[in-house]
Image (cartoon, rainbow, N blue to C red; front, side, top):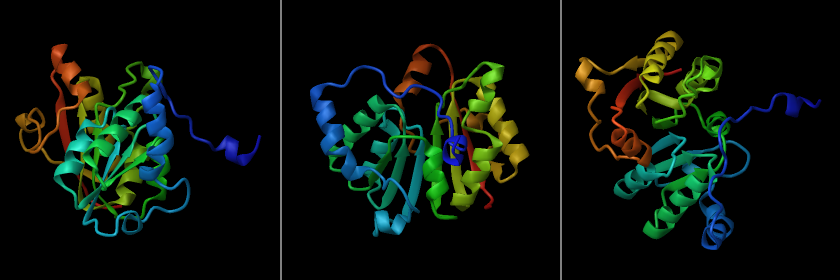
Length: 229
């Protein structure tokens, strides 16, 4: 087995759902390449968007509701979204095209590949919204929030940058609190229990959050400040 295959990361979860419509296939073939990140090499935000004053990363953007809405109201910020699920990628790409958003870049694959390529202390905020909880104990190692990924995020985030994790699964919330505390690069920003039950200012509801609320589950919104690598 080659070293490249041996060291290749495993990406868990679905990559596709409903079959794409012809118009969606055209979007993937003709528009998505124009807003996708380069396939290799280091990622310099200044090269991706010279006029950008800030850089925000969203890990697993789902349908892209949060990313598109924030990009529309903050055109001077560069937003990078990572999502391996092609149906979600198509939804965001369609929104980017419809709104003519020039400050969005998409990576239709594993976010860890992007994190590895970003410059140190270049990211101002990271969103991890309603990630796959992998509820079975033997699958907890598949959760994105974990010490290895947190250390990688700390490397690319500027000191004082914000990590926001939202979930409707209380076990995942507890897991996040433990992993961030043990890893050590992030300070929890809640001063009272109510702080993490209230949506942060400027919040954008996602379809996954709406489903959780409709099912009677109450999400929590965990905010952390990066202390730097």
